[in-house]
Length: 83
Image (cartoon, rainbow, N blue to C red; front, side, top):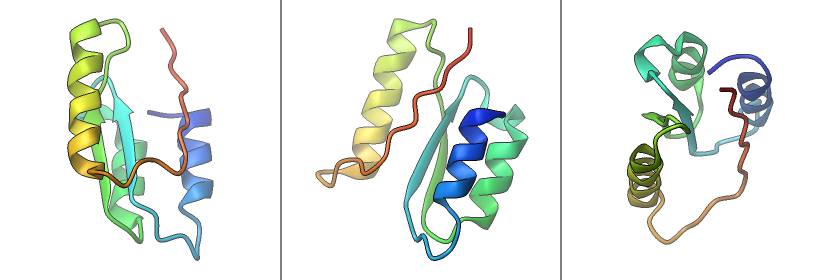
């Protein structure tokens, strides 16, 4: 929700990007940098809960992403998690 992951996401959202982005954080409400990106994104944006230490949370996040994307799939995946 900060650092390298936010930096890469910010670059992907630079104009003329009109990407749908889905970011994750253990606590989206406290991920202020991601929330700021969400508010300035040109395309649809989502910040969802993901704690890589919880297997059931990983599955819930997968299901939420699947529901958001439908059958369109991903163009980019930035997997940057710190424990």
